[in-house]
Length: 378
Image (cartoon, rainbow, N blue to C red; front, top):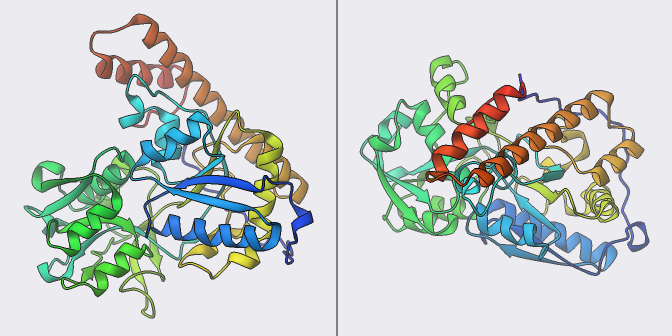
């Protein structure tokens, strides 16, 4: 199956407190991340503080309201990296949803590292004043939809599917960004919204007048999980121990995936990627514990066979560290070949200049993947 998850464990690597001379990074750097108050933004800020203290690097974190606004600066070279999610990584690679528009297309995304902590879930939270207990109870309720953020919307759709619902079964309420959707939940403009359980906005909702509840995902509900993963195959059941309403409890049984994911593009300088990866690994003791859920960046939690390929600069570092395997390289080569097939199909579709772009690209994309022996997703 295309979605292989092989997590590296028990590496035996000893991280020491790094100093400035250990890294060769620009003194000024920029990342894009999720909205202010999101878990991804908060973690990027904490990592930036460690970079400043250890290496004198000033990291500017640019919040983006949606996947496109986070990925566009990366594509244009206006930021070095993006701390994104599955939208700005997997969906951008696949050229689907907003990335299937004629001015986008499949992107040559490359991974440095990802937060695979398992301590958090990526979930749909609901206002606690509604008395909702299961996702099926969302029928007829107001559910947030983020314009220009296909990852968030697909994830919400997957949770609805788990409950046997579609967007047609709920009242869709559009918002311009992630943060606005959660402000809407707090202010009674919407009843449900998607976030990581450790998002600052989720904590705000917990403390707000309506409260917050995370409906559960039953790992034994095979039919519900099948519906969920048919929409978003990167989800796996997970018991979160960190987050709003969760901290200090026995945990919340939901679902999750890697978030945030630190990405570059293929053309990003390999030496820069190598040194950024090195800094992320070796500075971990200095930023660990500085934001909720940040422990998932640890080296022993990295998944070297994810759904998006790693950058050659990151591979160089992992090879030197002794954690890059032949299996990881074979998997990476297959992912890069997948991207090449998608890019070729995109150029051929553009050259054909179809009158119905959306339909033509969807058909061409699926055919190219099937003909190349790759799993067809979306």
